[in-house]
Length: 362
Image 1 (cartoon, rainbow, N blue to C red):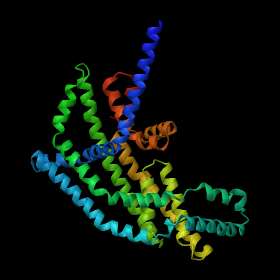
Image 2 (tube, rainbow, N blue to C red):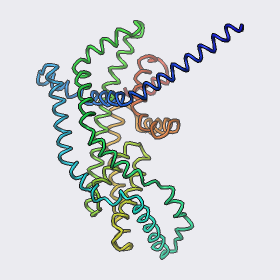
Image 3 (cartoon, rainbow, N blue to C red):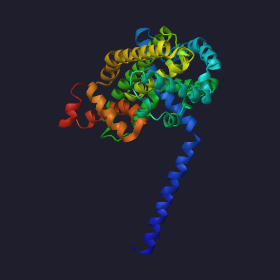
Image 4 (cartoon, rainbow, N blue to C red):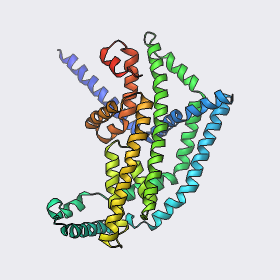
């Protein structure tokens, strides 16, 4: 290699690295717009069935169907805000859990009382758990961060909501135009397969995200009912937090149950430990386990298996594999990503034995 070739290679490499750096910088600067666009795309997937229903059943024109759909969703969001936001704000105002120092002290008190309680049954909690290190290792800041983040979102929702609805309106209204533009840049030899993959993926993902929202709503309502039955303070916030954690497959519900137990004990710290706090906490844990049983036996199979045309064991293994590679984010995006890859594999490698095995139910 001549010095000139070497220098050209170095310059080319530096140019590529500079381009990547500039691209990442631009993405960082417009990250808010990218988030709006992603949310709008997800919203479009969720809203498309309603638009299609209005056009097919009620013979609405495209623009009217899209406008009606957005209006319905806007009414739903407004109703949610009017119904639940005052409740959230009221609970946040009185939520002593937001005082992190107080929360840690209450947690330490719970650990101490639990250790005393278990010692009556010859169980040495200190040998199983170093309470001081556990207190330091648990970061309770996520609770106020979650609640305050929710309030900030609600406070800034006007800009975000308008942006998302505006983008969604044109994605729904002019989706034929965008789709035709997309088709025009595809290579002719692969156009048919790519278009079929996109259409099938869109249908499956629409079903998946609609089902996921319904699943989280059901879990939240059931959690809330359990906490209300046993008179747990701040039931709405705890149920909402645990329902959101349910987005993380398998691990999320376990974390939710753990924190529900801890927050239940802390919320009822003024009661008698052996006759009130422990029984209430046990009942809440049992209630949450029953909710998870209902979710795992009914909600999740209907959502993951039916919407993605995949066997529950198949979904379980995919979540474990992608979760091991990419962590919690991987677990969250595992199902939709796998669904898209599976559809593409069926279109491009229909005769492959392994692909046939995976897609025989699709």
